[in-house]
Length: 217
Ligand SMILES: Cc1cc2nc3c(=O)[nH]c(=O)nc-3n(C[C@H](O)[C@H](O)[C@H](O)COP(=O)(O)O)c2cc1C
Image (cartoon, rainbow, N blue to C red; front, side, top):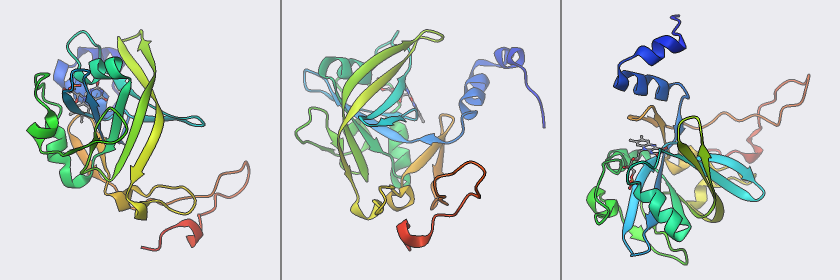
């Protein structure tokens, strides 16, 4: 083991520090957030900070970098209150990574990076290639004062997913979807079938979930 202090981290070269600190939280979710400006320009960008906030009401959130420069996803959400969260499959990680480039507002990353937009009753488009897609309505935009980032929260309005991935107990099997995971800002991981356990109780043995709710494949 090596030990690294806060002072040493602050002394790291900027890019090294960014990659190092970004690695510390482990494997994160891999999503494309799709939006459309009020003027009708579609936008797509990769985000690794999407998190579950609660199931009732169904709520998720993600972290937005400081909005001191043009952030199209942020601007579009503020204008229209609408966004979609689309799982990144391991099959298209390279195209998905490309959406992080700073394209001008008039350029749609759908076209530039090879994705297909689909339209529904929601203002923001979905990503057709994605095996799980969530339509959201802006709930809150919370400033994180320590570093000027923002927690954007969204009400889940609708979910579309590959049917085979939804197990009888409500669990969504990411390995069936082919969803990827992200480490730091450039590491993409394949997700294998999960080992699942029953709800843990104090002083009781942790019990494997039996085959009842698991897909046999
Ligand atoms: C792997 C990866 C994960 C990222 N995650 C986030 C994130 O969680 N929050 C964020 O604000 N930017 C994140 N970014 C950066 C955005 O994708 C990038 O700023 C993009 O240009 C935003 O596009 P927009 O201006 O069209 O919204 C990430 C970039 C990469 C490569």
